[in-house]
Amino acid sequence: MYLNTGYLNHSHMDFKDKSRPLIVGSCGTYRLSRHPKLPTYRPRGRLDYQIIYITAGCGHFHFDNVNNETIVPAGNIVLYRPKELQKYEYYGEDKTEVYWIHFTGSNVKNILHQYGFPDKERVFQVGTSNEYEQIFKRIIIELQRCQDNYEEMLVLLLRHLLISFHRELTREHILKNEYLDHEMDNAVTFFSENYNQNINIDDYAASRGMSVSWFECVKLFL
Image (cartoon, rainbow, N blue to C red):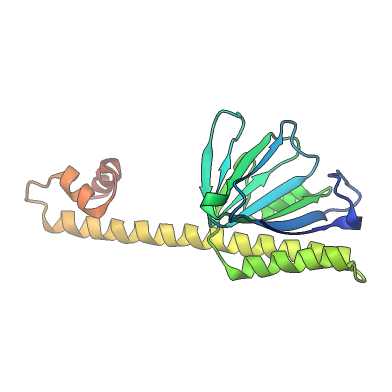
């Protein structure tokens, strides 16, 4: 197993600190290949926030209940808030690789809202990107080297990471809306040109990979 981590003031303890708006506490990466299993179980969660970015393989997460399992594949991040149950496992057979970062501060909740992370949602699809990995690696190095003004640099890098995630989340939303608009135009054209035909909505919806209820809504606009 490959492991690389960095901790603020070299302390492995999680902490809550509201003296500043945003504070990075730790960051690291795991890469499993031969190690059979790497479990984490914190029934009372942590005092800080945590983001887990899955860059390869997948993670097995148990949100709210230890008996529930959600498999989160590469290209997603998992966001934990303070005191939330944390139970998850990585398996060597999945060849899982993850990056993680812990942070705290007096304005974290508002900052997360600003960058498109609503309350209660935990899994966000951001895709895989070398840019994310490079930012995580820079954060780890800053924590390890503790150079001048490194705490300020950590905050800038975390904001850079959050902005990159937000841009991808926004881009996916825009692409989805563009796709739906295109399908709407196609459906309106088809129904208008074939208004005198006996159109089978089920067959047409299936041919476009859409739901019947969606095409029923389209008909209301005609």
